[in-house]
Length: 394
Ligand SMILES: [Zn+2]
Image (cartoon, rainbow, N blue to C red):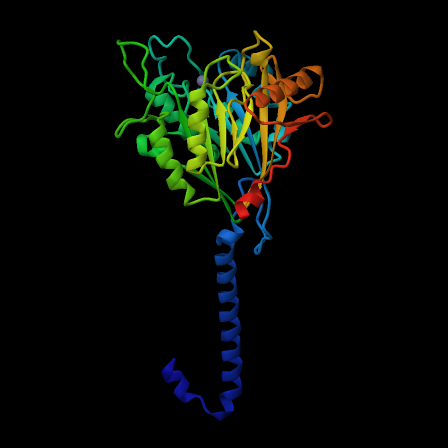
């Protein structure tokens, strides 16, 4: 270049200017495209879980989150999916589940082709891997695997479950290759908001047969689920609190088929809220329980079943979907939508059954000291004057 430059005389200066001009324009285009690329990787412009691009300079936006209870895709639900198609259980709810930024549920089964039922357990749930794509299509972004069925078919089936979810881009929380991974929060980023999830289960520390004494709980070098241990949960909440805008705690807990949380559950829930949890999503009793507002936090003790084959009683055919609107400052409002499961297929149809369920949930919540508003059409329960956002602001 230098040799060439030395040969340039006045007559060539026009061409030099032209060449420099072309080079500068080229450099400009290159820099611009690089900056564009960088800005698309900026947290202010991250891709949402639904794949939409956010605005580059977003106005403080609102986020919609949905949560449901137990999803079990084996046993009778599995046979129905075989005979009626994998879509069958989701047909009447998938549109609504897809309408949120983040949709959460508790996956109450393993997903695998492998594994053997753990001896002595008595009830084992394992779904076919094809359900994973359907869970994703139906809108699920994150599923809890901290429960008393994820490990029914032993270690390899449990590891497969996480792998199948990962392949479909569904995040899983509450289980992992060791205890540290099982306790690891999942942080969902939508726009400039970070929502952190943690999940734990009771019954992780028991086994069913001395023939094969396998516990569900993860250990320092063993895969498994995150156990319900108050001290450990408090520690994880406090750490996560520093990193996100909203802390969501999923708990697989409580007394099966009971509509009431125990005093112990309630006092521990208060400790979790005081430690920094904004929302507790409970499941496992297979029936619904009330909702309680405590110290600016929301506790949904049990959302009941969502997809399950327990057709043998009205209470086990009932469930709730929790809808939360939130922004950077906190929760704006929370609603409970009653649902009925007909032949393993949930639906939100507004009829006498769902109306009765809504008033029952209002009564259960009243027993816990929380008064919910009942809207008849559309049918839902809400917390009146929920001003958590403003409270947090001060
Ligand atoms: Zn359970």
